[in-house]
Picture 1 (cartoon, rainbow, N blue to C red):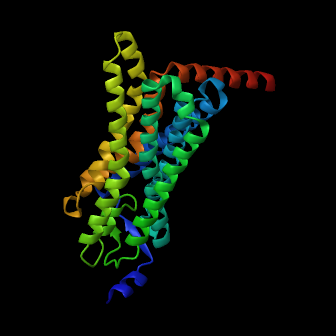
Picture 2: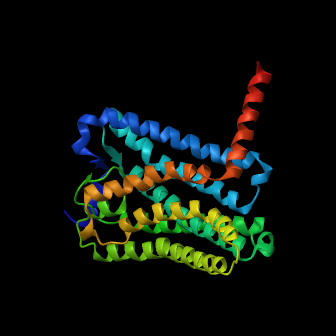
Picture 3: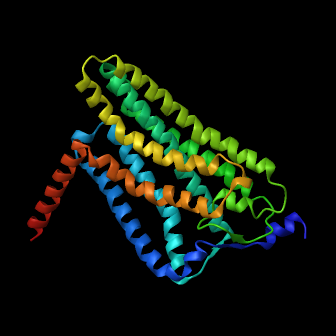
Length: 316
């Protein structure tokens, strides 16, 4: 059978998921569904809070709102299909559905990488150039940064998805719980060295470039902080960055360890755990991290809660 026949013969794939935990699938389904609902609710709450309070009408919270939106989309690409697989015990995913899932996953994931870089630049301007902050970080500039993040995400998603799904596949069982590049390359008939180089090359652009921009931003912030005479001023200035730094470490640490390595280093059990962390754990933790020590978010949440209570009282 030649390569073209292999491509046309495959109309669907089988997601292996977590076969070792199959007997606990209903328990896993319940836990995963609960986590998904909690994550959706917390991220949507962040979006509603930022939208409803004029005090939060600043670049920092504008970016935070888009981060919450990306987290909702990011999870919703993966989790519903995984829940369906666990509930009905059907691991089949169509060829087209698999391609769409890969594209959307990469689109939202890469967009988040560049959005985190934009958030780092926002903190750099706020701390290092406070008098020019609103001039530099104008509404149009913020929208350009967000739009640029989505454009980069769509380009990377299109490149990887188009190239990957034009390859000849000799197997249908994907040893993963969703359509990710490395497990799919393991099913390709031909030598995938060029494709692995392409994956790492694009990952260097999509992951390391924004990460380098984040490092530059925080280098400037640290230099500015060391020049401050008051310890209280340093602490107050850097406290606005801690939440962002924690999110960056969580997201880049797991995503980088997954994509910046050749296929020969792919370990299904380890990489499933890594993928689980940045598709489920990170979106759940982000709103908690940002709202836990943020007095403005906490105050806005209290206002929103009071508005909701007043609306309920008026209805009664």
